[in-house]
Image (cartoon, rainbow, N blue to C red):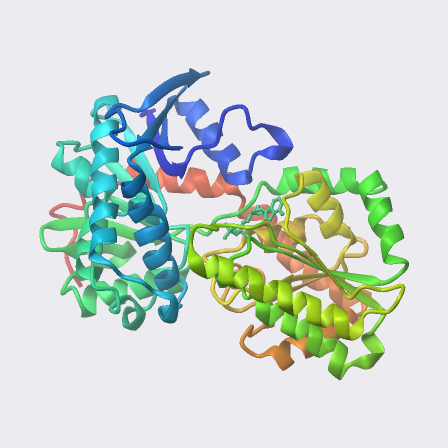
Length: 466
Ligand code: ADP
């Protein structure tokens, strides 16, 4: 079996184990331990004139290689082009899109730096798997340095439709960069269609069956790999949460009221102001719900170096304050708003206690919280997932109450319906969702991407345009 090389911006420390490590980190580490290999990424540090070679250490069969960046390069790359340009673009937020040539150049410079640092660690028959929008040009840079082995790319966030993608001044260069991979994985069929439509209508490429794409002299494949969670681990955590001290404290604090829970990074793609407004609207237009339901929104701060995230933080503090100021009773606070991370076991207890999971992003590649909420439910008395149609997860989780997050009054009505849903219907919907969560796990996702990447040939002479 070929050695595996993983590239991602942040590299999970081998010390993060068990409840602390995220599902993705655990699955990637498992794949690396099975095949042996390298996990390469940013060290999290900046330094003027950083060393050209990464810091290297080994743990088991895995070599960790961490590259330090020049502070200006890192700013242009991370807060600049990756999170100030590509993130809003891919989440359909053109009003928030900033494009600056210096940042685009910084983004490319960092990718070139990473490729130069990684190249000496590569063996000719390694399989390289690059993760996410920070590194779209990495394959181009590795090819320019002479690497001819297999390189795959997985895009964790949505791929925008051509009308949106064309607003990016560097759209053509970015898709040329994608064509230097052998396999490009996206979350949903919708995303695949969006990219293929761009290729055929704007880039004058051709598409053959199986998602094989021809662009100039290059052949590569585009396919859907919906990411999942470690369902068994979540079910175990949730079962362990039953009767735990966390669960008892939470139940006691609710005093018999229903709980609606949201767990999202504080990010403008997550639709948090709309969610807060919908909860406010529920209390306004369904006054009989007052004092019977508590909403808990967990939203740890994220990307504070980007101005839009600081503005969102202020907006949410104001909205939460105004909902609580308007509707709170001396023994009931309608909205509990928490800005800190929690251990997975505590999250599992919160999910399991919550009658509603409220996941209403304006746009999301997949949304793993939706899947975690489903996995954590008690099968005998499951809660209801209220889910945005614009989350990738909505393709699979058809047992959810599907909402349009731009329709605040519609969402308030959906919350009301979900709160009154009879047990039989809750069980049927949960079963449909849980079947998908249990089948499409993070392990399956990882294996199927690597299986396809290992199997690709050079899509040579036998593949013809249709
Ligand atoms: P994104 O990757 O955009 O942040 P996802 O919903 O796909 O969104 O994944 C978020 C992950 O982060 C989930 O696994 C979730 O459990 C975890 N997470 C989010 N908020 C917290 C928190 N406050 N404490 C611990 N984990 C959290």
